[in-house]
Image (cartoon, rainbow, N blue to C red; front, side, top):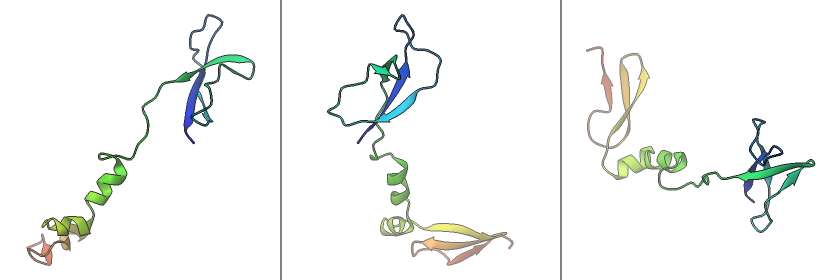
Length: 99
């Protein structure tokens, strides 16, 4: 079920400076107009969808397996001045920067 954000309204129907609050509601439920005896309105927010550019998708695209599959080589730091290949088949297995 989605989480909706609400804000309190003053006597003139304008948003107050008070903190907003969240409420889990079914999509089929009507928006609240009152909470704890005070007028409120639902805050319009962008949905949080794990799409093409989400953090979750980005991590999977940069995984060692995916980089290897696409022909990239990736090195990770293993110590001071030392890097080891973690993805790909081309290039040296390790690189020492102290040379």
